[in-house]
Image (tube, rainbow, N blue to C red; front, side, top):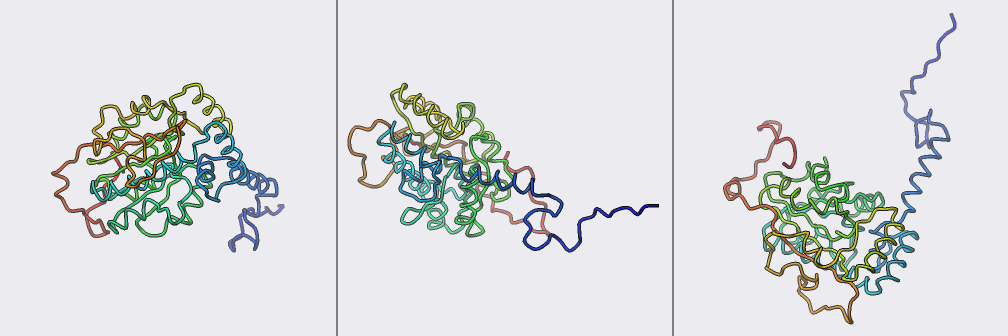
Amino acid sequence: MTPTTNMTAPATGWPTGHRTAPWAGPEREDAERDRILALLDRASYAGVRDILAGGHDANPSSRTAAGRLLSLLPDVPHRVQDALWFAEAAAAVLVRDLGVRQIIHIDHGFPNHPPRRNVHEIGQAIDQGCRTVYADAEPVVHAVSRCRLACNDHVTVAAVGLGDGAHRVLEHPAVAAHLDPARPVAVLCTTLETVPDAVTSTLTADLARLLPAGGYLAACQLSVEDTRLAQQVDDAMATALGGRWGRLRTPAQTAGLLRDLPLVQQLGVVEAPRYIPSTYRPAGPPRSAVLAAIARITPYDTSRAARPRTTHTAASSPAPTGGHR
């Protein structure tokens, strides 16, 4: 009888220097390399915002997209700054004034560099126990964020974005494992212009269903009154970003996203600089604006607030299952 060939992989592991299994072959290696290079090279809105904010993490494709956006909206660098400042101001309001200790920053983009601070830095400066999730579906952003932001046990990074739907963010394993479902959670999103109507139209209802009692939404949207200009921007960005774009909305449409929600500080849906405790105001007549608001999503259950948080160990009762409900 002819002896059979043993096809089992060697127990000693892969040969030194190989990045794939020894039976993968050069074709699979080439395909994987091409896939990774394509992801690294594609334009992203995170890269566009990074360029417009004076950063240096974006790739050439994002620089090209940023130039196209700048040609249509010359004041957009000011609007990017507005959104970044709002994220910082909102984080402080949520933690310091509203007592939230769990924040999900969705579609956060590339991490901030000093002197600008990231959300977890603001939260932990107020309370060291503040927990933060950074959620972004862009592969490069996710990789950079894991290196720079996942710096302690109170911070985690999830590869999911709001464009996938609020339920996918809140039920993502990394998100559910990091947050306590019995304590309030605030969702921070400063790029609603990238989120399609199919998601924004049900956003507040989905959050009300999924967030624990005492939840908040802090959000802002790049808006223009000129619908023809908005369509030009939408067409340009959808093409540049490979369809990963929502749409610019008018101020009225942006306000409609938070219709009937109780707003914090009674400011309403207003231009983001009104949330910023500074004298900064954009100069000249703007072609666009960043409209922002902080709203309560779910009422706070005072009976649950009185209960101390239970730490589950192997010797204690089983941990709750199912994540956010």
